[in-house]
Amino acid sequence: MRGGPGPVPGRSRVRPYSGGGGGSRGGAAAMDLHILEHRVRVLSLARRGLWLYTHSLLKLLFLPQRCRCKFFSLTETPEDYTVMLDEEGFKELPPSEFMQVADSTWLVLSVVSNGREPPGCQATGVTKIARSVIAPLAEHHVSVLMLSTYQTDFILVSDGHRGAWLAVQGSLCALILLPGQVRERDLPVVIHTLAGEFDIYREESGECVPITCDDVSNGFLKPKPPASPTLHPVQSPQTRFCVLTVAPDTLPAIATMLIDVLFYSHSPPWDAATGSQDLDSITFFSFSLIEGYISIVMDAETQKRFPSDLLLTSSTGELWRMVRIGGQPLGFDECGIVAQIAEPLAAADISAYYISTFNFDHALVPEEGIAEVIQLLQQRQEGGR
Image (cartoon, rainbow, N blue to C red; front, side, top):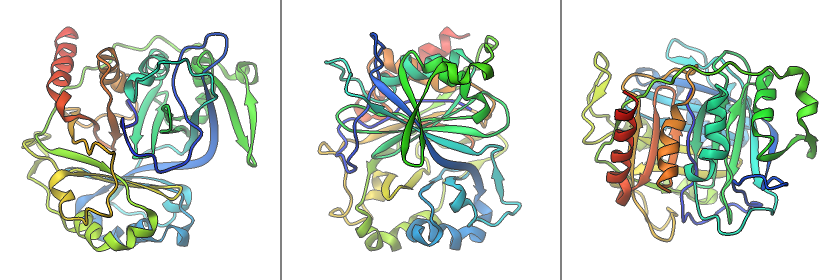
């Protein structure tokens, strides 16, 4: 399913990290690709069945050490709650008719700068990786999901079939790091596709072991040319969003408010028959707790309910508008969706903060640029007819 952009420009950096960024390989790659050891599941919880999971979700939200969960993300949309979490966290969720689980287990990759980034690279997010990551994977029929957080961006990549998947993680430092997930048996396709841009390593027992195309050549099959991707409609609600973080030790101070917002909020009417909603406003709240670092996306009105001195954002305090991709639920076996959004925005040098959910994709763009973004995406739609 899909694919897309990355980090928020101007975010205050909370997590020390060794930097990252995209760039063409002028004899030496400007970024390294590290295969980590996380295994992540992607699932949907029906709103009507949330009561069954409240205890487990509270444990994952506030007591991750009790379940040894290091990767947890919960996103509320009008349709459902999307959860991305590692295998330790997945054990906490009881199976039921209210849960749908994607047929994949994901590994995590990290894209980091190796210090050879060419000077003058100011692009961020989708602009940074559209040509070096998103477009090449789409051309090779590799499907992509994305999860942006305050500190980190994740790209989830598949080849459109069932099986184990691989995830790419990134972070924000002086430059940009980007992430994704790819099916393990299809790793040769990704390595052969991206080896010209990245030096690739696998982390084993804390050590980084180089991987070359020769290491996986026996498993590489030249992919079939992809069919023309479906051009999905986009919608833009009027809701304004904030991208925030909180220090982990202050999380208990906002716990009551988080519980109220996540479990007792009321969504605008959702018409399942037409797959549409009054998009003057939209219910959307995302909370991620990954390796001890917290990221929150909430609308500006909801932000007013929280103590302002505990919420951290960029120095400019920018607000974001949403572009919601898909008139009907998107499929996990479809590729090129993120590229449809990423490439026009990259050409216009517009950054985006991207969150894929179980049914739809969501790109957050700076509020002052929303009119230009809508125009660009409408031109894309008209050009594809």
